[in-house]
Image 1 (cartoon, rainbow, N blue to C red):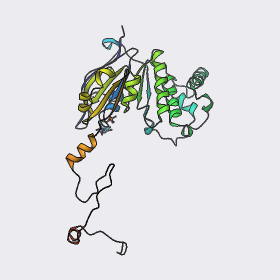
Image 2 (image 1 turned 120 degrees about the vertical axis):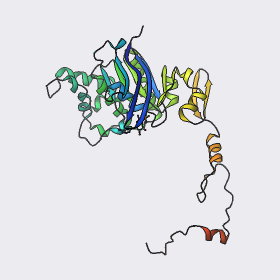
Image 3 (image 1 turned 180 degrees about the horizontal axis):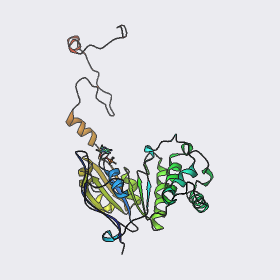
Length: 300
Ligand code: ADP
């Protein structure tokens, strides 16, 4: 039986007047590997902040452990790389050691044991030789590994990652997801947010589709359905099942149909697909009606 590590019960969250998350019921159990998907602005990062305790629910309850019986849980958090100040003068090893700051007590420096653990984590994650490099001078995938090492230093039971696969190439994305899989096999529960539906369909056992509320939750097979994705993204998407694999893409013609329905504002050239656009004629009288445009000869 996998006990709950963290539970949100009927949790809502508002920024000022704006309701960002509404009546969420989410349970993260021991050994879970959960992907949170949804459009931009859906509240995915805010959900992670509720899970890591940096945001407090406006309504509802957060329970630690089964029935809220735990007083604390060990969390590792990997922030979105985009939120990091890369000019801060810090090496890869120092980034990892920061992960132990919360446990260091009054000591301003890391113990020999923590340093040795940081080095072995860097080795295990394949970036040991980069330990003394400035964090800025790493590839996106290597930076992601450095921040995962930082989170692992605390031996977390739950690891939260905000878009760990954004901004990296396909091979690196697979590497990161495989790495997270092995960590999950070692017993760490993991929650990630992502935009990459195909990667989560292939790699993750369970998904939460979030858009202000939980639109659906379950296995990729259960939730990656055209009706759910339409409700989630407000757009038509195609789900193909082939040889036990799930592939999600934009529905063919969805953009063209929406474009045709909406038309396009007068005076703005339409994008054309395939054929050359017809020659556009501008009779003199029609041109006179247009707003004058400034020409090179006019004074600036
Ligand atoms: P996602 O991660 O799915 O893109 P976020 O959780 O970042 O969504 O944001 C959810 C909503 O909350 C968005 O509408 C966003 O503009 C708003 N929001 C996020 N952070 C703040 C903030 N600090 N103050 C006010 N509104 C915010």
